[in-house]
Length: 159
Image 1 (tube, rainbow, N blue to C red):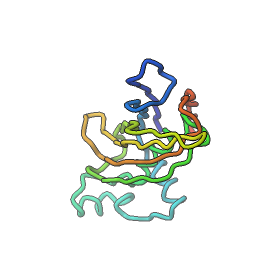
Image 2 (image 1 turned 120 degrees about the vertical axis):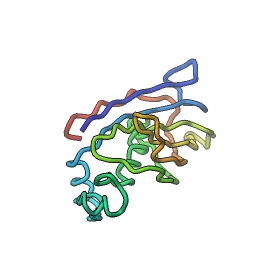
Image 3 (image 1 turned 45 degrees about the vertical axis):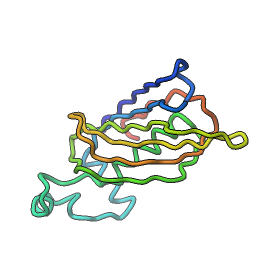
């Protein structure tokens, strides 16, 4: 598995999450990722394992499960805001993702409001192939314990 994290922000303070701040993570999914996801979720859809079935359904190869790709969004939030609570997510699956496609997941703050000592963040969520094609579009809400972003901990090859 290949994981690369990128951070960009429109703010003058790169460690403060505010409206317009963008967090990104790039990942290339593998056969092992799909197998692990299938074992965990019991998703045995043949579109994820049988190339002939996928081709008969109009795809060029086996598909990465869309929910596996979308799992990048809460991972981005949790890596920068330990203790964050992911409240909601809407998803529109626009294009298929295949083994070996580099996917860049992006989370952008669209609104933030404080409630007591926590923050409710509305987020635009997107997954884009390295060629610029939008594969997933959506919105999320998360409760953040702080607006100070922690540097993400780099994951090992086994995580």
